[in-house]
Amino acid sequence: MSDAVYNRLFDELAVMEQKTGIVLSNSHLVSMLAVAPALLMLKLDGLTVKLCYENGRLVEASTRGDGETGEDVTHNVPVFCNVPLKIPHKGKLTVTGEGLIHTDDFEQMKGSEDKDIKNARNLAAGSIRLLDPAICKDRSIYFYAFNVIEGMDTLGGNTDS
Image (cartoon, rainbow, N blue to C red; front, side, top):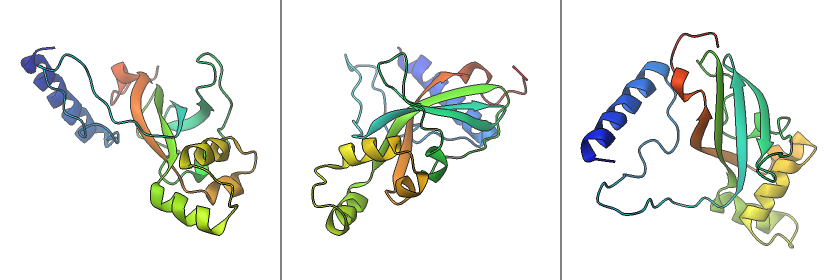
């Protein structure tokens, strides 16, 4: 992608964010260099989660699973620290991202809970899959979006599709 195309798309993103009020957590964190032969991304160590919104309401959340079918974790998403249950968007919007526990929160939990907790990634993955949202809430799960997989074409639009 040329610098001119990248800059045009970046400007369009900024306008959409301003118009809709939706700013994804990774919108401006990683700059894309036209001269680089590969894309480098920071790796967040958690569990991939897909959020599906319809007409501005969160209707489904699931894990990646085998790539085709994941586990339904909709019941736990309302207790994540930063996932909106309603957004200003009509139509369907599907976003993927990472559910994780911050290092500081993990260290605090590790000191106060079960001594067998080995790492934040496994704790986050297990917590997101729990059947009891009250326990998940106590684990300080955060969601960081990294991709819009459906609905980008109507993002910010006034369509009812």
